[in-house]
Amino acid sequence: MTNWIVILGIAKTHLVTKMKSTITASLGVTFGIGAYITLVSFMTGLNKMLDDLIVNQTPHIHLYNEIAPSEKQPVALYADFKDAFNIVHSIKPKHSQKKIHNALPILNHLKRNPEVRGATPQVRAQVFYLSGSIELGGNLIGVDIMEENRLSNIQDYIFEGSPQALQNSDNGILLGAGLAKKMSLSVGDRLQVSTVKGTVFPLKIVGFYQSGIADIDDTQSYVNLKTVQNILGEAANYITDINIKLHQLKNAPLMAQKLSRQFNIKAIDINEANAQFETGTTIRNLITYAVSITLLIVAGFGIYNILNMLIYEKMNDIAILKATGFSGIDVQLIFMSQAIIIGFVGGILGLLIGYSLSVMIDNVAFETEALPTITTYPVNFNPWFYVIGITFALLSTFIAGYLPSNKAKRIDPVRIIRGS
Image 1 (spheres, rainbow, N blue to C red):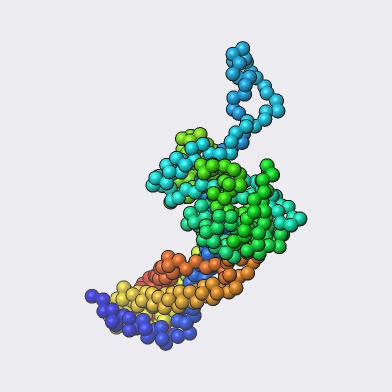
Image 2 (image 1 turned 180 degrees about the horizontal axis):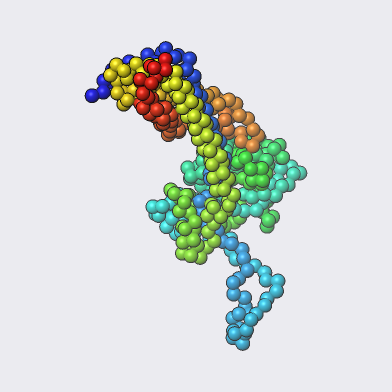
């Protein structure tokens, strides 16, 4: 029966008497795990921030009426040309309404769907922003601002004002940062918008938002749904777009096809709208985890080399232990215990160092005009990173300790004593 008290006592003695080697091995684990935690926390936090810029501002499914040529041209309806091959030049798009037919019943149907986290109506209008002698073209989007905030976190992009301020104002507008800068406007100022039909409507600025995408910030603004309907002179059921957020992003392509067939409407899923999104995310994550795993493997080789040298230096001690009655298994357990102790201590210190560096990075100022609401570098404090870190520390030291200890287990004490 194995006497663990004696085995652990001998392991402790070996570690203490060779303190330099012990510290070196522990530091190999410490810095390997610390570097892994710091790198993976920072890189995944940065990736999440970049992904959120796309995911938050892009609906999982976008429903709208597409302007496109008719699939059946009038010549195809003429009986004499039924079996002929008809070629029609300069096909013009058919005249169709931007309004979604039966938009309110469609919204009610979507909200009852268990796969749908939320569906929000929008009215998009092309307008001119008028302030003094300045006239800029752009888009005005009517939204249910509180529902948009719940589903798309629009609050994160509002650096002055609030969603509540827009909700409480019948003629309020959340102006894009690029527009505000070009027109030298502040919160509380008034500007006018003119539709393509020439209708002019006064609005009061209740806040500014900045998405981080210059093309959007230079042209786009938000108002209440009812406000833009009044500007266009349309009824309360006039809706041009429906944005859908799902519980599971992966279901978007299939559901988009289903909704398109069901309601005879154009449905674009997020993967189709942002083809480069998934590719960029996959590549960044692949690089992050490849570098992180490399750091852990390098640390494991360092531990193996140090333990191998430690066993080589302890040949005489191994011979004495075997000569006094310790079995090969006992000797192996002694050196395995040393490896696990080094892995545990080094791993815990590595987690502490990794966490400390992550906290330091999380508090470093990060200022950019493109993202005014982000004030520090993004860091992801996912507990699983720490679980993976300590697990790999113990696993790598176990493997690194097993190979040399298995060699020590087979040492013949007589040959070593004779050689000495």
